[in-house]
Length: 133
Image 1 (cartoon, rainbow, N blue to C red):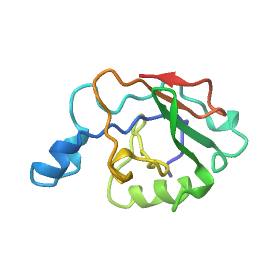
Image 2 (cartoon, one colour):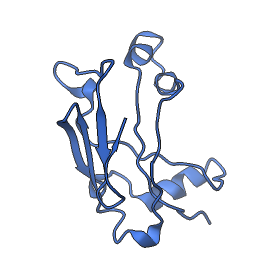
Image 3 (cartoon, rainbow, N blue to C red):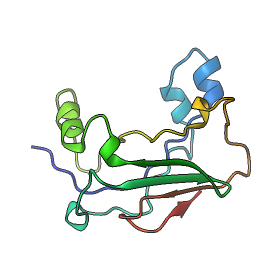
Image 4 (cartoon, rainbow, N blue to C red):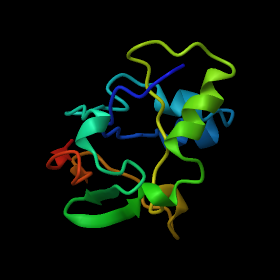
């Protein structure tokens, strides 16, 4: 039986031009070098009172873009681990990235993509202080 070793922040960066205009494959737009930074902390389950009650924050250049909670996830962590275990062998160190709250630039009207020099600050207060990329 798979168990969760810990929780961390993941910045699910996307290169939208490659996703939208280069044959529509989402994976390749998330696979560039330096994409999907992880961390900087890993918090063990015993350090979190309620992993389905965590606040998630993201701002770009000091302006809040995302504010959500893990309680709003369509599927909880236990379900995701169970589901993924049905078609892949989970090994120590594997990550299951659960998604992102509303506020993604692609979904804005008009879309608001990141630009060179933008500063992204993410935080999950129950894990630790914010991280900036």
